Image (cartoon, rainbow, N blue to C red; front, side, top):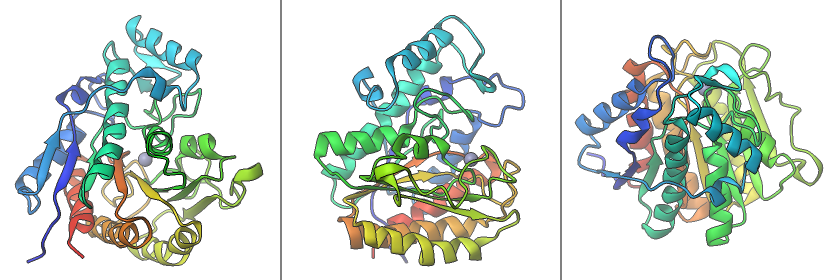
Length: 321
Ligand SMILES: [Zn+2]
């Protein structure tokens, strides 16, 4: 029997209060229910520690997003509007506060990674974040949780070199935009080719700008891509970049919508692939950055497969090596 490390899960019932209008909006509270159900009934159940996060203060948010954007977002929620920026981006009265709480959960994940001794930490948050640019909401995202965590890690703990791996089916245009010119944060993403997929960015020739040139790596997979192409990319593209960059910490944008049963992408990953991704990351975290790693939930929209996929991922990360 495999031995699992403790798994810290930053989660609040308040994340359910971000109401995307019910009906058939894919980014629904059911996603988190699915994950918790799997984690609390499967092989990791004795290792899971649920931790209630505290809201982030606005200063943290301002490390990524401009003040006027934050004000527009708050105003849109409090004035009772149902969308912000684009009709996909459903909001409710509670959304602003819930988004601050999600950001707080990502900040706290960093604290846990610093304080714990190699435990696994994941922030199971809504709304997701990787499409949110500095001044623009997109793709159900309002605040860029992963970028906020990276900035916090640098500022609070003076860990200057952060490597972000984003394995969501979609390119994290927001993370790329935020760190495009920043050589201290390496953004690597494996996603469905932008010709076929939202948001239309993440071509392989997008490699960073100015002093950030060479610190962005986009691996664009063809529609229908299965596990083997991801495993090949992890071994042949991502690990060499990681090794060369010598990061102090790893932040993972963990999206599960590349699953073959998830109709938000044309990718065809198995549930088991997420376990392999977790295993790769566990080895890399130990080898390159003294187990300083956090994961933050991004996409994953088929509730029947999201829970098992997250469980598989965490199992891979948490196996004692
Ligand atoms: Zn996605």
